[in-house]
Amino acid sequence: VLFTFGAFLAYKVRNIPYQEYDESKVIATSVYNCGFFAIFVVAFQLSNSNPLLTHIMSGLLVLLGTTTTLSVLFLHKLYFIKKPHQLKRNLPTSRPPISTASKDDTDNDHLVSQLAELRQQYDILNEKYLALVKKYQTNDSHVDIA
Image (cartoon, rainbow, N blue to C red):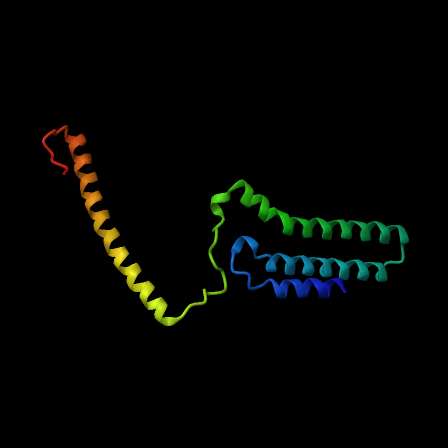
């Protein structure tokens, strides 16, 4: 029942558009780990006749499965706490934004014009920067920046 519920959760949250909230792969991996180690525990209990060895190995397999599952759940979160610049914030991962084609064309034209203006401003600032670098490298005080 729990494996079915875990698979259902992984399926339902697969289309969350923001990476920091997308847990579907983590949930699916956790369900897989639990099932994988449960199969080994059951197989080991059915195949071995020594009750002490069966009990010890079952306990170790359960601990290993739990540790692996918790590592899958939390190690990547600890990594992003340690290095938050690695996390791409607010970038849709699977679902494109809903909009109409005419609005997209208008937005694209507006963005293209803004990009052209920004390129012109960049070129002007880059020329001023290069003039300043040249001035301070050659100690020439006659360079006109304006």
